[in-house]
Length: 148
View 1: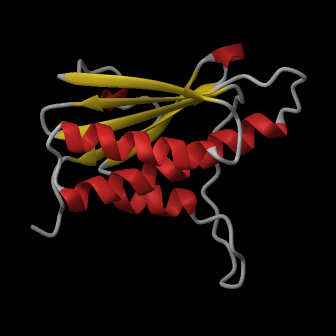
View 2: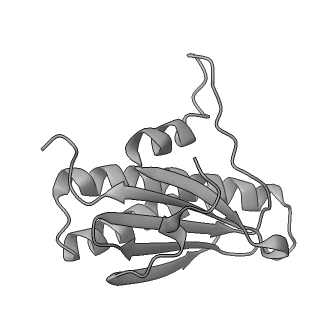
């Protein structure tokens, strides 16, 4: 993980943005949106499924972080997908400050493995702090499956 790697600042060939409420259903909406966008961009099916998994984990973490703030009027969670020449970048924004915490959960715990998956499936990932506005967690992933 790095703080503000080049993936956060590069110009994209194509981009899309989606805002979601901090709801349990948001991860499913983000998965559907990501799958549809990446398919329209011609990304291969295996890579699409890996990217969808990363997006789902990042959105789930963002929703949990936003809900934990206990705001009277919750702020939205954002998903931006960028098509770079050699990679797809997912940027997820939420209102909570701080770094995401990579955990080492016990084998019998059902939660806490999301960032382990993000790390395994991404070329690079990191966080950009937005001050009082929260943060962006981004992941740069291969456009094609690594098994080909």
